[in-house]
Length: 193
Image (cartoon, rainbow, N blue to C red; front, side, top):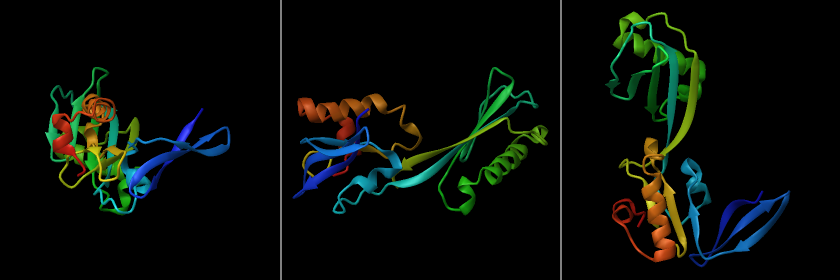
């Protein structure tokens, strides 16, 4: 399969992408590139663009619902959702402010302690499943979608936890900019310009 690895820029315009297929690498000419690589987007951009993308970690735990909780609980940065399987899904999004954010054992225990403070009857619970995701975010919590000051370069990043929710509108904006040369409402509100 063909993989586009990095956009190529000359004189503040997009001229192509470096591609790899079957261990061989070459440059493909193009006039339009969309960078939609989440937290790693800024590594692919020209240094002249200052896009304030920061990293967040999303943690999700699945634990037995020993408290028989039936309602969703939302507290600060944590959401507890009862599942049909007599389990709870516990989600939390954190800025990487402490070195433990990617330490699974530490964060698993931290979340278990937080659950116990909210629902004391969940004390002593065990984690059946834990996952960590990397999210890209912006200081104003709005994604960065649309044209940039580099001719032919568009961004679709910084969606935080709303990537799937905003996917259709993001795609519509990017396609409108490239094919129809139109601008939608999302383009002006989330524009990197």
